[in-house]
Image 1: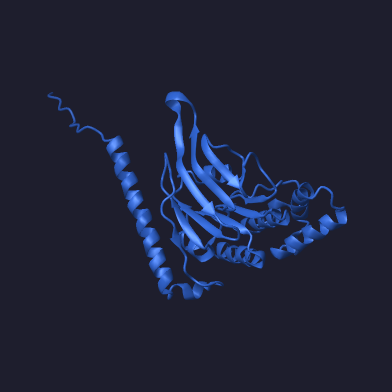
Image 2 (image 1 turned 90 degrees about the vertical axis):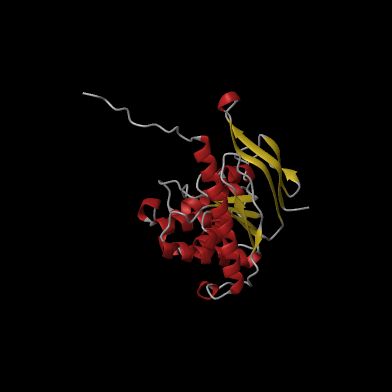
Length: 279
């Protein structure tokens, strides 16, 4: 039995003639301890897929199973790191993390909760900023707070919805390393949603493309046959890296061209010549 399973999942928004099928025939299986990346184009339905897995949405048909049980709502067992940080602006770094751990461990003493808060804030190198509010932090620091908050709840699975997409290249690279360092300590099951092929190859065990919507569905998986820990400076000379990267990009370009051709055919305009007027 897989740790996470999506079986024949469809998701439609709207009803009748205005209905739009966003996801179609999604089948996904993730084993315990795996790090899987799903790569897709902007607007392909990646966030809808995340919300089905974390329980914020229910499928129109099909089933989402976590440890063999249907996902019926959100759970502390599945920690989510969102793209937009989702921090409460009136609370400090420590208070934002504290609210999460208090919800996850309601029977714990305050002293134990504060100990956990300090541990995870320190883990993302934000101890000096523990009493600062989000407006006093850079984008990268805010995202590190979101990482600390999700991990401090001790989830059995980490779900990341393009968490680094809005960051500059240097901050993004540093946070990739921090997330991997934290993940490698206990190998919690992880799912990364990204539009960056290189990020997926660097972080994941396998990559699965999401074909563009509407009616988006998963494509073939690409196994990342590169030993861990991975060194970014050495990847460019790694034969498996080059082979895997080229295969994924070629696949994405092919389906992108297919989609473009479909749209052009669907909305092809008639040949029209300007009307001539005689004075």
